[in-house]
Amino acid sequence: MKTVALFFASSRYWTDEAALRRAYGQLAGGMPQGVECALVRDTADPAALPKGDCLIAVPMSGAVQREVLAAAGRYAQAALYGAYIRGNAPDELCGEMLRCNAAPTLMDSWAVLRRRMPGARLALDAAGLAGTLALWQAYYAVRGATLLMIGKTEPWVISNASSLAVYERRFGLSIRCAEQAELAGLYRQAQRQQARPYYEWFCQNSTGCAEPTDGQLWDAARMAWALVSLLERYGAQGAALACFDLLSEGTTACLGVSYLNDCTPRFAACEGDMDSAVTMLLMKQFAKTKLWMANPGLQPDGTVNFSHCTAPIRCTGSPRPCILRSHHESGIGVSLQVELPLDIPVTACRISNEASQMTLHTGRTIRGPYEPACRTQLHVRFEDMQHYLGTALGCHQVFAFEDIAPKLRELAGLFGLEVL
Image (cartoon, rainbow, N blue to C red):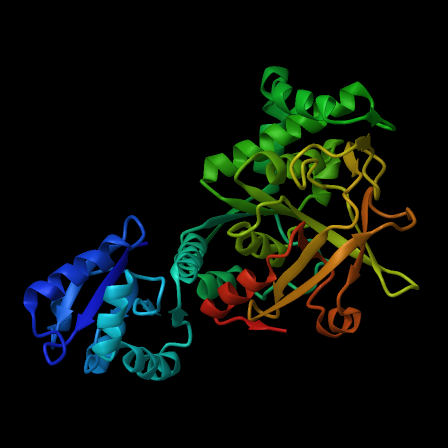
């Protein structure tokens, strides 16, 4: 992503060339590192403007509205920055830009730009400008991502898009496909020295082991190595893994999914749920906590008990208490029963409906009964339970253990997603 900042000034207002150059130098010096700056004086040839992906347009005077709009049309993303607002520049310079009619120019340009470019932004201070740049970085990180589909979506996951091309068209990402046999082959070839880091990680960060034997833990660690290696082989940032057919290998991929989401920059969604994998990709751009995909279990008190066997151990930083268990549905292999934190904010998200919509729900984690469901469980009280029920886009929800809903809403807007 390349960002350009253009400073627009009219000679009708800025009659002293030296003063204009000094003012431009001050403003350009305050731009974030890596932003290319240029001064646009009066009417400029649009073709001569610096090339880039994103534009920060800074009106320094009146009579530049048409130039601002013409320039914005040459970039994929655009934002207006109110440099004249007190605190954004030295007081004397703010006063000079006010005298030169920069204030009405900003709002006049914004009123038209926001109609022409639905994703246009208005930054009122340095924090707003930094937020805009972070949003653009997230947008281009998603567009440049490669995801891996391992196997086929499990037949009970009925909410995914009709084809993988739907996700590629909407988000500009690339999806590669790998057969489950390729992952199984890596697993069979895995040696103990390759599996040892994974084996030791889960031994050191678990507080007990219930059903699995030591041999089963080694097998699960070999599968974890195989999963991480497969993503590296394909250069993928994340994956949707159809995991149930892998049970025929006598083990599970639960530890591998947990390790990817906990200990690497990569991520994985299970059951071949590409909706969840793409949701993870979007959430990962902002989340400081780890991500977890889970099934909902409605409760009589209007809360939801979410459960799955692939939870990250360090969901909020330090390792949580964790018991190594067998896989809930099959009783084989190894999965995780993590004691997730109570009384913290969470964001639950999912994209679906042919990758056209997003649900965003915020709530807090609460204490609740342990049920005969997937091993790791977390009771959540949503801020609006009826909204959750009325906007559900699928079974699985992806959780961040923090409130990132406002940032996700903005990112959804850049991709044209309807937020329900």
